[in-house]
Length: 201
Ligand code: CO
Image (cartoon, rainbow, N blue to C red; front, side, top):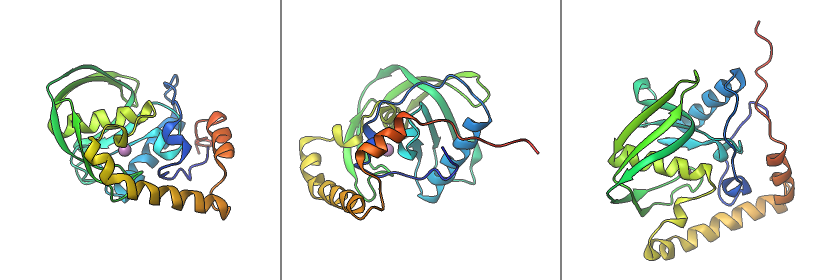
């Protein structure tokens, strides 16, 4: 993969492609994480998952305040898993791969997550409310699950037109040759490799 990683939008097949756990934490991965944070901030998001930049691996980046000046709110998580969840919360949710689409989604109120950081150190975090929602949304991405799957029936109905529009736009760009075909995109995902950071100079 090149460093030109960019945000993919629904219905790009990467969003449904099974991502794999990461086995090596190296400079290539750190480079990718940095680029993902950039993309997240450029688009004013709170979080971004590997599949959203067509990287089919278990990495997510987040900033719990969505504010690039608050680096202490930043979190890069490798192979994150939810080890405990409790309660429930309803709240509005969006996703950078679905620009302008917001709907209520029911999530666990509280989660305990376990993950590795970019130094390979395991950490555990307990969150409630918005940070908890964010972790659940981003971890879903790693398993090909999207917030449109979890909307209420009313939310799904209310999203139908926008989803159709995303489809039209994506298929249109494939017809024009701006975006490769699904078959080609799937081939790229299957042969995906970590970005090459180049020599240390
Ligand atoms: Co998302």
